Image: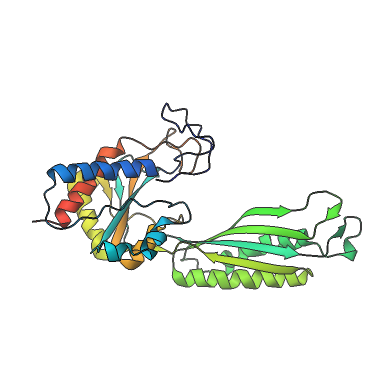
Length: 312
């Protein structure tokens, strides 16, 4: 259903056979859990009503949830509520974590391109240096969160790429920065966008270069509705006991396009622990491996959620 451009190094016999492509986030496992639940519900399910099983592609990008919603998902398949599940390394295998309210951050992609006249490295006074301007912008951007966002609010401004120059004796004409911007509140998201424009343009002007900011809003904040989350908690506790669930886990600054579906319908996004310890590396890692012990837990949760939600 979904994969990432990573060369798998897990060493497992079932590792990806495709060069430079692997399931590094567990979407193959998520798909299997839902297929298992579908098989059971089709043969022995005890419920009254209509159940839609959504196998959503392209979560990593460009965002299959938005594509499906834009193509009329909920017009063709009306839903009273929607639920989703994702594995999470660092949580005890099989433990279910719930959270009502903002649970995962918005994600925006920003490219800052700085233009100068370029020139000889020996004569910097005869040109304007986009590299120096870009370096100053990287530093200045760090003050947005530390000095402008309420300390009780969560926000991230990360410069993940810096591209400039090709020779040590040339001041280039162009430097480019690539940013990842995240927030847990829409108001904070708006503030970050406003301040990034202000900081970039102000710093660029002070160095005599021209700045172009390409600001692309990507996934929105994922907000789990109260009633649907409480219902899912009750199902989880019934299945695993109170020791097997976390009722209100911490918010995560990662992002998830299921947030688009939650803007259309009430629902909840549930995390299932992929395990802890040395053998459990983080998502998007070349050594990542979905914990197959989660298959029966996830499938059982979906079956029980369906039968409790659509009880006779």
